[in-house]
Amino acid sequence: MMNFQALRNGSALVWITALWFLFWPGLLQAQPDVTILGIDTLWYPEVLVNLEITCGAEKRFDVQRPQLSLDENGVPVSTFMFYCPPPEEECCLSVALVLDASGSINGPIFDSVKVAAETFVRGLNGDCDYATVVVFRGYVHTVVPWTNDVQRLLNGIKGLFALGPGALYDGIGRGMEELIHKEGWECQAVVVISDNGFDNASTRYTLQSCIDTARANKLRIFPVQVAEGGTGNDAAFSALARETGGIAYMGITMSELRDIYNDLRGMMRRHFDFCAMTYWPGCPDGTTRTVTVEVGRPDTYCGGNARADFTYIAPYRKNQLEEIRLKTDDIHVTAADTARVVVRIPRQYDSLLIEAKYIDVVFDRQCLEFLSVDFSESALEDCRYKAELNPRGLHLVFDTTVVVTSPLSLGRFLFKPLGNASARCRVSFNLAGLRTPCRFFQETGGMVEIVPVVDIDGNEERGFHVSAFPNPFGPGAWTGQDEIQVRLSVPRALRAMLHLYDANGNKVKKLVEGIFAGGEHLFRIDGRGLNNGVYFLIVEAGGFRKIIPVVFMK
Image (cartoon, rainbow, N blue to C red; front, side):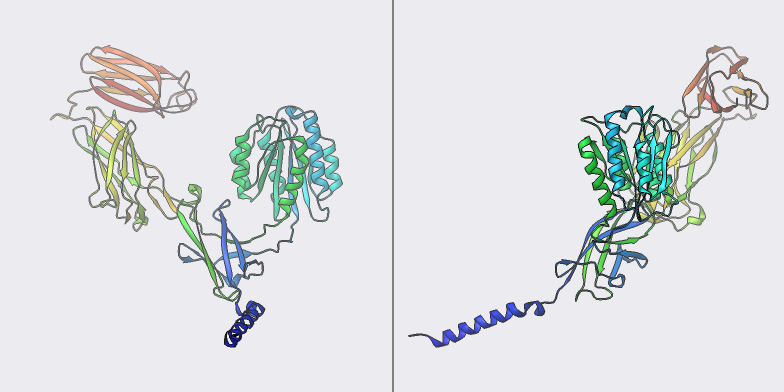
């Protein structure tokens, strides 16, 4: 017997299911989603956040700026630009074609380069695209200045020839100069093509200056290395592309070259098929930061809201930070005393926040002996650290990161003078490991002036006298004399050494060495082989040491 109740229940279930599939798009409201595809800091302090925004899983480009909010490290960013171009939108080109015309590329390779360049130019839109053609040999020549005349560009390429050495970096620099300050379009790039990428004739630009100029002017560089199975200066080509946001094509064969140029033209013309937010946080201090983007707040979008986080590391660029130069006290001590060098923070930074990591103390270990460091009642009083001596001096490593509000001093460093002679001992402090937002610490230093121990009558207990005249010396000095006289007076027979060092601590002249009778001795130093600059006359006698700065002028 049929169960009519079950049949009725089953029919109801079928009808409900049918109605659900018929009306479910209206019952389930679409929801937004946002994904941060990446963060570009190539032109820091400008930060570019690339976004993909969807509504009901469909990629959308209709989001408006009031529907977005941006935070960095939890702090709202109120000033930002937002651009969400339709994927079919294209922009006009401004391109510098920089072609290697040196002797190494002569022959069939250069013929193929010209054909590929002509193919690139024929694909330009003569109504809005602009280009320039630059060649480099032992010199750089702009064959065709910035123009949208396609036939003029083709004629310039057709008449090219290859000869002589290569000036790769000057060629790239000239190409950038042709684009900079022109009324160019958003899609700007430098396309450079060479058989090996070596440079032996540039005089104005280097690899680094090309990169710096491109980044400062938001120019992407696309290096193309043409070589039938060969290799060239791969590292330079890779750096040009990587550091400017371009792409490097290495070892491209002649058959591939035309396709590469067609790909480049299309790549530069199309906008990326995602949205972008641009803001300027400043402070390139190398710190790690978290960016949060919300879509649907404060104004709703797609019936709801969504958020995404992304962490990036800001560049560390000293030239974009404020420099802080700390102060040190010049110390005058007798040879029997302890020298105390105090590192102080200028009063305008009396509320400076310091992140302690390490301190390098560089000093002459033949002039001073390190005793201890005293951080009591100083900015670093609560920091734990480890002290390590090395050939250059002292390395202080802090095993914890402590943020403190600085008083007047960072700490006191204690030294023992070596010997009983007069000396000036240089002590420098490398505080690069101490950072605070938007500022960096430059190396700072002090001088320990050591005077001999004297007896009751005020005379030197032991030691010797030394003097040098004229100072400065040399044909360009005020005396015009090309030699300096050194007068050494010893109280008794002593073993003495007299040497001349340059400012980097290198011995440049070994003057005298031996045992000298008590009394006065005269030596002469000529300027042969010396360059202009400061030198140090170091005299050691009877276990004592004196240093006299002298200046040589041609």
